[in-house]
Image (cartoon, rainbow, N blue to C red; front, side):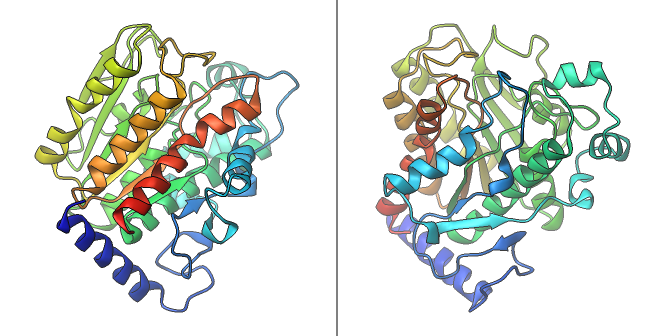
Length: 344
């Protein structure tokens, strides 16, 4: 680890302590219900409202979110003292990306059957609540990362949501809301979105197509959803059946140069596990070990340059909820290794 990285980590800890002081309740620095100023471990953002009821046998694996946290604590990857709790995303916050008309319709249940089919979800008050907490969680992870250097949520990555409609299990674009809020509240701040979900982040790409302060980078399976792709700042379309070595080589070929040229102040990392060979909606052939190596490489590469990272879990689809939750926890396990090796 370079001397610069250690200096960065130490500065981040000092700044974090200065801003929080002895605060033990929500403060103006963070969109949080609960902060953890005394924890020296990797910050993990979670809320019990990340879930909602769905019809029986629904394809979306809603129960994975609490199980991710369960396994992280059970396996002693983290303790409960490391868990930050986000505020619900306000309508004002959501308006920085989404149209007022869409928010009014979504929040108040004026979503017709065609729109519900496009999102994949039947509307409910619980669905609205969970999406708003999930978005708040991604923003909080980003805010904490800016002060601590690295943070992870146990949800997030709803990159198919557009300003005026939802799509593909995505109702609110959490990555876009976090990036837009943080760049708007601090002029000159630049955010790089590294999207390694197996599906292109089409909503995110569309939202930031004309915004130079946000750079969208997507590595995705070209023959997978969405059929109609948007144009990211950098799209890397890969073929079906790609395996660990070739996939990681693809990421390695682009990430360092992006960091050098764009010079972001924050990286939002979508660590989707749907490139896994067992994923029901993927078409690639990555293994658990390949996902771990991918996540470790991305976060170490970014942090070693003194750039904060906030990670979300992205997509992942399986009927075996426990196996899927363990797979999603790979990014938190890799982040814990980066945290330890950086002396953060």
